[in-house]
Structure formats: structure tokens, C-alpha cells
Figure 1: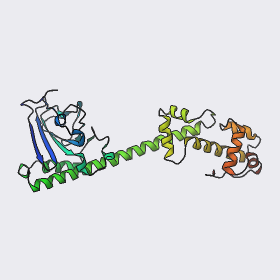
Figure 2: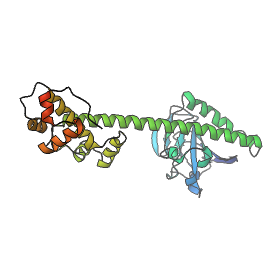
Figure 3: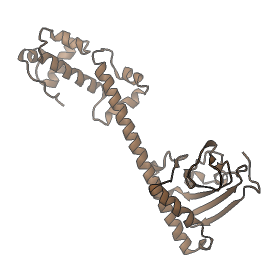
Figure 4: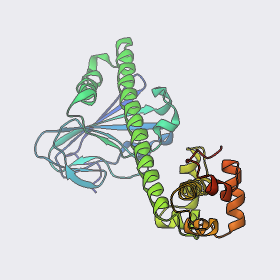
Length: 290
């Protein structure tokens, strides 16, 4: 990638807490990204606002991809050496601001590097229309009004980051719920397998045992407890059904209990009676004791 040339001039100035860098590119030349010369890059957030004068293809941090909307926002990764560059004549505004100025918990900023927000509609579009206007007035530089405009720009960025963090958490929660549902379905299908274990369940879903335990911990139960509970409920129903010709030991084996004595103890703890008593009484299914 090309380094600074006359074809790719940089305009740089300060506005309050913001350091603003504007690159006008002819589509062929790029500049060294400003974070490479910033000793405090890890304490800063770099935000690129993409403007496009001609064409529709862009290379953002080394990726060739369509750029249908001028004004898309990219949270630049200071660990990457590439500069956001369009494949056609374009302008890119880079905002540098202290991470702490956003007033957002660091946990909400983790993972944002490299995130790109399409700003064609909604709150994103409003922010993108206002940001360039706030930071492009030269007569405001070094003035009290300029400082207030910079604060407003930071507040707008904080809105975007907060919304992004909420969306990320929602996606993670949805993915977690779907994964947990798939695992529970798998357990139901394999309750009769005496070798069903956290290790075999995790392996079947290509996750670590630790991740599996973490999924169930949020439900207030361990994986093994869930498997045992579902097995006991299945045994309970069958013992109380018309299948009374089956022995208690046969029902236990049918639902994955390898040890009759272990099953009997677990059943008594869960329901307060021995499985043989439950079978003779033909009681209706009841909830497992917690």
C-alpha cells in the first residue's frame, strides 16, 4: 500500500478532545494511518467516516467490498497498518478521541475494533449527517463553541457505540438460547445412552466442556443435574403408565441408568418414595424436588 504522496493529502486539526484527520484520495494512493505514530493509540478510539465522490467499490482496512452508502462508519483497529481507502476518488474523515471521553464502560468497547456500521437509515443516518457538519467548521477551531461541538460529536458517537453494544449482547443472547435449545434436544434424543456425559455432549456440539457448563450455569443447574432430572422424569412417567410389566431395573436401564441402586437412591431423593412403590401406586407424574 502506498505511503503519503501529493495525490493523497492529509488535513489534520484539533477540535476540543477530537483530533480530526481528513484524507482526500485519488483512489490509488493512501497514507500511513494516524495511529501508527500515536504513542497513546491504545487509549484512543479511531472512527472513520467514509465519503465517496465517484464509484462504488471500497477497500476498508485491506478488504475489498462494496460501499453503497457514503458516510458509513468504521471503528478502525489501531493494530492494523492499513488506512481506510476507497478504490475511487474519495474522502475519509478520521476522528481520534480518548476512549474515556465516551463515558462508556470498557466492556462495551471490547470487540468494536473493525466494526462497520451501515448508516443508511435510522439513528445511524442521523449521526452520520451531523458528525461531518460538527467537525468541519474551520472558524470553530480553538473556540468555546468548537469545544461544545466536539462534546456533541463525542455524545453522538457514544450513542452509536452504546447501541452497537446492546445489539451485540442481544445477538449473543439469541445465539446462546439457540445453542442451549439444540443441546437440550440432543440430550432428549440420547437419554437412553448410559455413556451420555458432559464430554460427549460438548464434543457433539463442537464446544468445550467449560463452555457447556457455562451455558447451563446461567440456568441454575449443571449439565449432569439436567440429564439426571430428565431421566428421572422419563422413568417416573413410565413407571406410572400401563407399562407395569417392566421391572424397575428394566425401566432404569431403558433411560440410561447403569446402576439400579443409584437409580433407586436418586428416585427416592427426587420423589420421596422408592421407584417400586411409585410403580405399585401408579401415581401421576410430579415435579422433581429441588
